[in-house]
Image: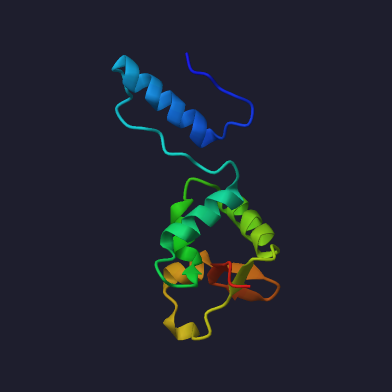
Length: 122
């Protein structure tokens, strides 16, 4: 049994759980990775993972990270995220540079497909 206190974060609880298992000499084969509670959080986490010193990350790469989610749900979450003060979606200016994967992953906003996401530039 572990002692969970009001205000403990998921990371705190996970740490206590693993410490308890270690004390008993029993640990799961592999720890379950912590996942953000909502899809916007998953998109932000995917962006942070893929960013790699680039400000803009392709929606194709983001969608590959959240492939277990239905496309309609991805689109809705990306639209909500685009409305956040710290997020931007832009199109690829050089349309000839787009791959079929980039075109398929684009999010249509108004009459323009958007291909890249940036978070935290503003």
